[in-house]
Amino acid sequence: MTGGQQLCKGLTVRGRAALALGAAAAWASRTAGRGEGSVIGGRITGRIAPSILSQLAAGKRTVLVTGTNGKSTTTRMIVSALAELGEVSTNSQGSNMDAGLIAALAAGRKAPYAVLEVDELHLAAVAKAVQPAVVVLLNLSRDQLDRVGEIGKVERSLRVGLAGLPETVVIANCDDVLVTSVAYDAPNVVWVAAGGTWQGDSVSCPRTGTRIARTGEKWACSTGTFAKPEPQWLLRGDDLRGPSGLRLPMRLQLPGAVNRGNAAQAVAAAVALGADPARALREISELKEVGGRYGVHDVAGRAVRTLLAKNPAGWQEALSMVEADSVVIAVNGRVADGGDLSWLWDVPFEKLRGKKVVASGERAADLSVRLDYAGVAHEFCRNPFDALTSSPVGRVDVVANYTAFMELKRYYEKWSGEADARMLAHV
Image (cartoon, rainbow, N blue to C red; front, top):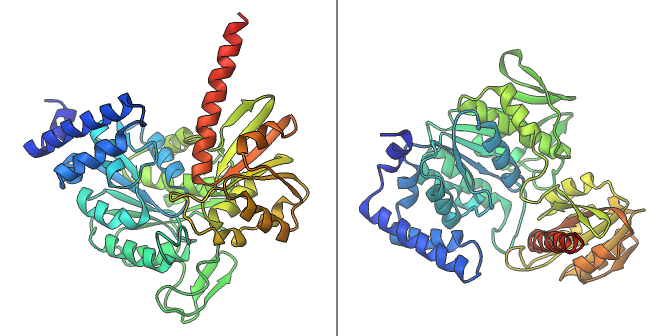
């Protein structure tokens, strides 16, 4: 019997039937042109067999990745870093709630490893079901207040979730006050100084309510009872430093300081599962784009790079990566984005002064008002695609929130297909 067959052995009759019906639903969805079908398939599977997550995860060494920003990128990094150890199942499409996780594990039933990004509010329940070998905590800041609520609620939920995982290794960003609070009492913590410039949601201590004082890279609550732990992994210049004097050059193709921090946590997670740190970092360094993020597309003579941002902390990091003189900002306000766009006023759009900026998306009017107050001269074009094709030929950076980003991905795919068709027509 192979290792893959052994991993599948724990499925109950009900579980196998649920997977078959879920697969049929996914096929029907694809056939009807309603999408890939993974979410509806996972949802039906979970309804029929509520314990299916536990069954599918049995025998796997699983990594759960959570946090406000960077989940998809860090998940992809860890998958690459674990390639030397064996096959890895993962939710590469970013569906990070129960249905998407079920679909990912069902698709990779024979894989001995799983790396799953998980929505912050779902982490406790998912961790209880899959009993992960490793949990990676990236960062915490406010996001979609109309759905998630205040960030303190998320911090408390994650802390409760970790309390039930005494054997799990927790990879935690000790530069983030809220993440540190979540992991502080866990028995097996690997602290990583992964950085993070957003401090707007951690001015007070989540445990004592007192002020957080910062001195250089250090932070502590004013009572002195809660402070930044000493990291086992940290970034120094162009190097990643780890336990026992380990020192590795970090040369990523993905942009931004935030991705250097993501990579540091990804390496720490891979090492916790037995990967060689140097090889893990080499694999991560080969990544050029993740799910459409950071990739460059040729659109009518314009080299278009697209960045995803969903909340003030994410927008701050994305804007720090903007390099082109021409910038298109696309903002929608659908359910998946969160209907409350008050966060626009916390984004440092002032960084875009002096660039050629176009405000676009369904909520372009709200964005335009914010840009006016930021002193950013801009044009208004509600359709992001028209905004792109009317931009000067050359490099264009696009920064978009979630649903606008997904629409742009589909647009690039369509444009690429039409360009290929035009090329073939002239052959």
